[in-house]
Length: 243
Image 1 (cartoon, rainbow, N blue to C red):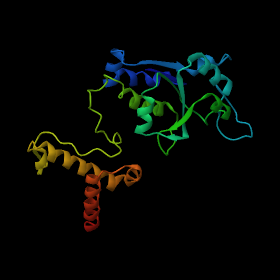
Image 2: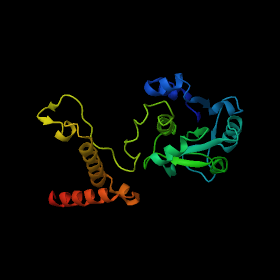
Image 3: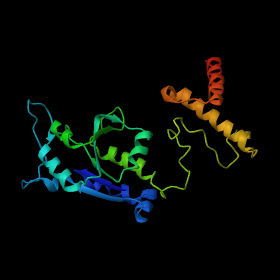
């Protein structure tokens, strides 16, 4: 996979692509990356990329002609073009898994008061990472990039992300390590007995419980097995008793 980032602030990505797991993956050529400065496609001496909005209003709007030229210079027939935007598709793990299969992705980072609306004629999709507004799309581009890179073959140990929150549609179960007892709190006995069947049931139960208590919306589109339905009924009864 090749990731291309179109931004007004390329320096923001220096540490991001040179740290921890992402740097190791890049060094192993498990993906390729190119950070592109949008200003290089401006043709005035001050490298302006924005202008005042028609109709008046505060702030500046990024120009469509400059963005279009940058897109044309950096896309191929297989490039998926994304625009970070607070009004875009709300990002989730399913979208990350779909994008991870793409051959090449170009992420355009929003800034200022946004883009000339006509930019949308040249992108495939607008993406939002949440219901809030950032000063720019660079952080959103990093979030999207990280979620895609970690799914590339060889980046993480095989199977290591299969139980991650959202990967299966549920939140991840609690994890513990040594010491066995800390500050009076012991690791659950079921995790210490080596019974893999009981451990599986415990983890599934706790995963369902966390999802029901914290993100019940995730269960609306989740296809429960018979075992999970029985567990969920028990969880609901416990929740009512604890109110």
